[in-house]
Each structure stands twice: as C-alpha cells, then as structure tokens.
Image 1: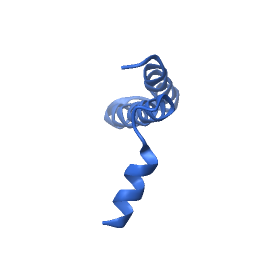
Image 2: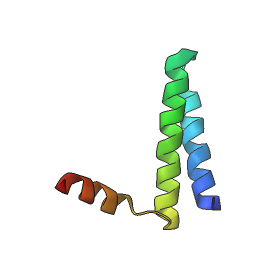
Image 3: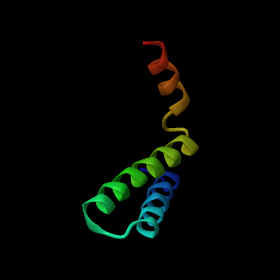
Length: 60
C-alpha cells in the first residue's frame, strides 16, 4: 500500500474517531469512513479509478 493510500486510510479513521461516541455503531462508522479514506487515497495515488467503477456500475 502506498503512502497516499495509507494517509487516506488514517484520515478516514481519525474522522471516524472524532465523529463517533462509541459502541457498535461507532465501530461500523469507523470501518466505513476508513474504507472511504482508503478509496480516496488509492484514487489520488492512481491505483484505482473510482469514476470508471461507478460509470460501469450505472450501465448494468
């Protein structure tokens, strides 16, 4: 995993930590925001193309 993707993942996790109050809902929110941060980091790094994935999903 690249440095940009790792920064995106950590940013998402830190935002989740700031937004949650705990419990199972907080855990789920942390995982979702961490995944979003990872996707943003991978997109910025050029590893994946989120726009192409969304575009292909809308066609089918």
